[in-house]
Image (cartoon, rainbow, N blue to C red; front, side):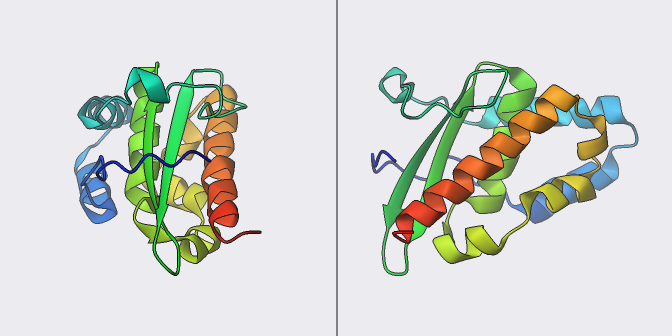
Length: 148
């Protein structure tokens, strides 16, 4: 885990994302919205696009940078991807998990949240596996922050 204290990159709330999803009638509109969320996500600096920050198990390139502060440890995540839809998925995960305590992250179920959005059934198996790899990385970083 690399610690490069930078500001929280994304300030949307899950409530606003859920509300926006509820307004969209079909999957194509939701797909475009996910891409828009990714476009709103600030890119990681080139220096952060390292092998150490790369998420394994994703078909696309995905980088995750984690800052840890406080007691109990609070994790601030920064992420990026070279694929538009995946960058949108990263943005949703950051909205769910960044700024949470390590314990809250470990107790969370991001895959259930994606299912509530109706995203899970519209992702290819490859993207679903990549999403699971990203969630695993968030949780591994939370365990690391707790010293587990």
